Length: 326
Ligand SMILES: Nc1ncnc2c1ncn2[C@@H]1O[C@H](COP(=O)(O)OP(=O)(O)O)[C@@H](O)[C@H]1O
Ligand SMILES: [Mg+2]
Image (cartoon, rainbow, N blue to C red; front, side, top):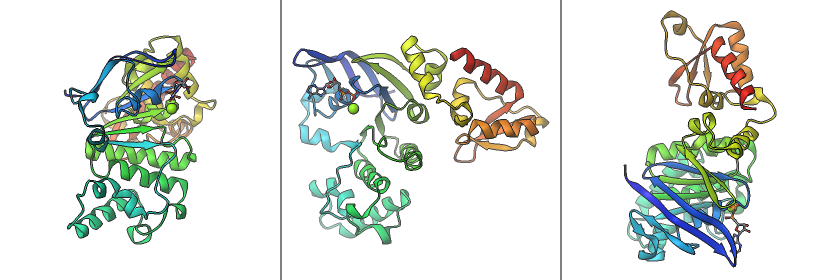
């Protein structure tokens, strides 16, 4: 495995306030790494040290095994996409111009206007915006969710090897948020780039992450895969933090979250052949309703691939486990 980003004993202080403390972390190439923690825990400061919007007070950050300070800042940033909560689209530029901003600046478009136009049109299609309709619009003619889509396209369109996303969906309504999370998963699967995604929302972290880093007061408390964090939280704080993400209504919990706690069963002869299907995005309430009628249910992902099976024993174990967790 190749390390894309490495933090070595990184410390950051503003005046005498230490906001990131002895931060050590390796993020692998192609990984979707989620940094999660409460407001003020140092998430934004940490990722700003990757594209040098901040520099460490001590320690160092390496990108592709080279200290960030060795790079020309401009070139470093051109290779690192950046998406923020407040999308900063240029109001006087069309959607197409906004998306193609970086290659324009780099002078890569000259003489290839037609090719570029096709590229941008394809990108719009990928995020379900009809290019005939959206290509020439201005940001003010877009909804918040649509603007955020363009912001994401601008950050990833020209395949920067690294993309930083700082709470990009926290200002959006739940439906747009879900759609854009799915978009990030899809684009990541296609581009295999390294993504560092910051959020304070545990269920967002669980949905997106290959690995999660949990921050508190400038310290990295645990780094692990979602499943590992849920099953073996490093300490009481991590346990309680994730407990909060379970929400008040257990039955509204997505199936995907339940299967992180409790592994799915494998195919087992006839009982699984006729099993009805539920999506990982569906709610636990619907899974329970199905289980009241059928002994076994197949769980599939958004590509309609069966991931495994659950039965009544499984759900009882899950529910009693949750009780334990609480
Ligand atoms: N430029 C700055 N000057 C002084 N303090 C700052 C600056 N940027 C961030 N901080 C402080 O650092 C701490 C961590 O902030 P931040 O990294 O933005 O946290 P998070 O993104 O997790 O909410 C906060 O207490 C914040 O007030
Ligand atoms: Mg922040």
